[in-house]
Image (cartoon, rainbow, N blue to C red; front, side, top):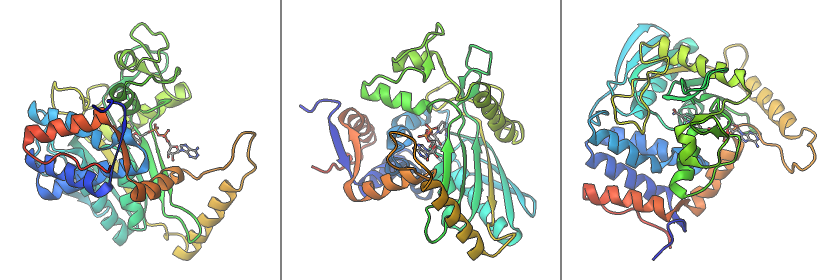
Length: 356
Ligand SMILES: NC(=O)c1ccc[n+]([C@@H]2O[C@H](COP(=O)([O-])OP(=O)(O)OC[C@H]3O[C@@H](n4cnc5c(N)ncnc54)[C@H](O)[C@@H]3O)[C@@H](O)[C@H]2O)c1
């Protein structure tokens, strides 16, 4: 009998086919299942396993509890030629965010910029997949979201703001990788604590406090306590910024009212804020790209501090992970595979195919 922490490899094709099958069996349309599965598998490929296919059981628990509508289709309202709003209609956050970025890109292609506010959405996983959608279309982007309370505001002791990621990107040049920043305003993303809990691992001290406000390395205690903001008041201010742009502006929940992806008490009512920008508004595309090459080269060739072998551009480590995992497969642990297969059994679909 395999140890629940033993490693299992799956190919990205099999991971995606599995995700599509369980989502479709849960009532999600083929088109939306494809979008959700692509976003989740991209997280696994990039090494952001905290936001990969392991999220499926918790998402489906929300479907079963009637707090997330698997059949919902996002709807679009054009506000001005460069501004639109998407209503997620309490469906998966992925199709709502995908439609928002698709619309922002199309407006940016015609007018240079496109801005889309999204309301009544749900968790959309790793922000970088939406930044990639823009990069693949040759666009710069901002991708903001709010999320459920996990972080105290600076000076506070209880959860109020979300660990809401700030993401943005720009296409690279001929000799550089795209710039993809995707970071939670906490010392670590909360999903990394759930991942440690699933895998029976400890977390580093300095990530979170327990219920009594004491530092802890126990993921269970950390989830009952608070995440620590990065950079003290600055991390807390960035979390508030995500709430202003994604929650207050959109008409979605804000100020600690978003319901989290592991909480079955009601609809998420998450808000997002998505902008696409044409990079050749102020110079030729060729010039922009060659300037990105200069920036990249100067960053990665910077003098290294002691103990550092290589300097990476934001998003580069994840890109290297992706190149490797596309060939070698995605590592999961047995306990995670068991949880996914339990969903498959309940829904009457095939187990996830493992590489031996
Ligand atoms: N949807 C949600 O509500 C939600 C909430 C929280 C987090 N998340 C996701 O969790 C993920 C993890 O967030 P995180 O803050 O823990 O990410 P992280 O700390 O692993 O990385 C943050 C950023 O720093 C860059 N980076 C990391 N190490 C680097 C290095 N050595 N050199 C150069 N750049 C480096 C990465 O490329 C990335 O852009 C993100 O994908 C985020 O979208 C989602």
